[in-house]
Image (cartoon, rainbow, N blue to C red; front, side, top):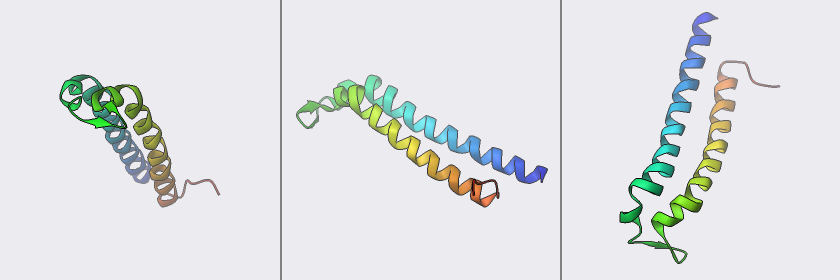
Length: 84
């Protein structure tokens, strides 16, 4: 049981690290660091760097919430700790 708990939490932390890295790259990387380069492109009439800073990071964050829920439901079921 203790080994199963370690595996569970190790995978949970891996999921969190991956999803937070994606969020950081999108919000800070695309919205701030790469904004000038992305502003050469347009999305729905807005410069892409501006769009990522204002809307894109929020959309990605909401999508990542749903991805995390799905991943955790699968992980919970695999370790028999899901809500039944």
